[in-house]
Image (cartoon, rainbow, N blue to C red; front, side):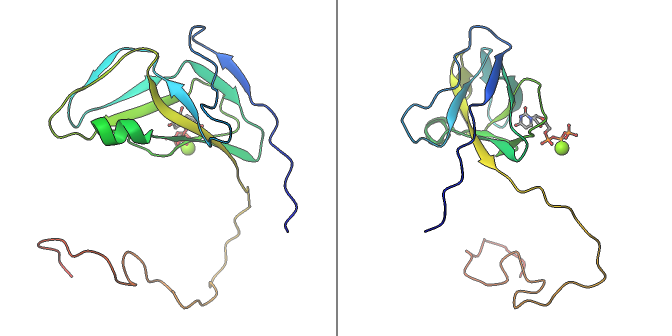
Length: 160
Ligand SMILES: O=c1ccn([C@H]2C[C@H](O)[C@@H](COP(=O)(O)OP(=O)(O)OP(=O)(O)O)O2)c(=O)[nH]1
Ligand SMILES: [Mg+2]
């Protein structure tokens, strides 16, 4: 069995907005901690808005924060994040913000200050260097991509 890596130490959190709750897990073992909106907002269909969460964090080098949508709000209201998952770099000390988008074609989404709008995951990340070469090694996939292996649905009017 592979040796377990040591746990990531507690992440230092600074509350830019002193009223927001500290990020906590709803259930033991949950991957994400919920992030809240610091503002009331109305998001019409198809519109997006960058929203503050009221917290800044200090992630250890070798980790990354990933800001994911919440599935309940996605399914119920069509709320998502434009750049999902958002990337929080280890060196970033500003407020974590979320670029929300309303994917519902008809209904405006109302968000109140304090509503949980997204979730933050912290993961280890490799930080390799990049080196330029003239040729890459050959593989069976080669340059095939974007459906080259088949099995995707045919869209009406799709150009093949
Ligand atoms: O959902 C997000 C995504 C990013 N950020 C912050 C933290 C991150 O470290 C920084 C830069 O993010 P990213 O690299 O994705 O944006 P960029 O457009 O490449 O900006 P930059 O030139 O500052 O790297 O913005 C957020 O607060 N929320
Ligand atoms: Mg960047």
